[in-house]
Length: 167
Picture 1: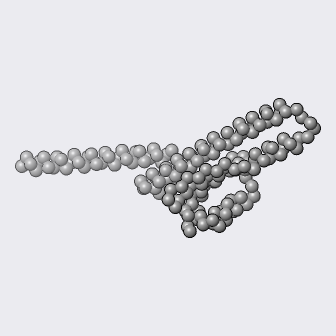
Picture 2: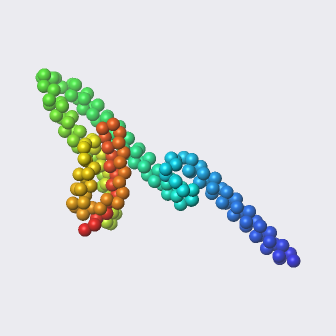
Picture 3: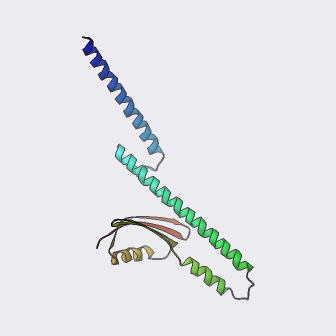
């Protein structure tokens, strides 16, 4: 008789522990869901919430990198302006304009590759049809775009591509 009572007691304890674990997990998921925009977890299941949180964090990291790069670019432009202001002027602002224009034509590119997959980040000035040209360029060298994320601030844009080598 005591053995049955112990088994029943263990079963009830197990049920209570499991109920508490589920309640705690639901509380954590509710907090996680409250920390991100609703569009990242449209369904209420665990996988959607966790997956949405992962995507949200990735986009926040990307935005942070973009803002840091933008800040660095602004600092470099400020340093260039200070250097140009120290140069004696000769009534010819075209030399300074050309130098700044050449700097703005440069894009910062970061590539990381694992087997046949690559992550490509491109920070540049915004230009018309730039994305279309990049995607067409990737396709012309046998890179299939799997995922794309775009972040813009002022006149700068950060493109983050996830690509696969398809040839």
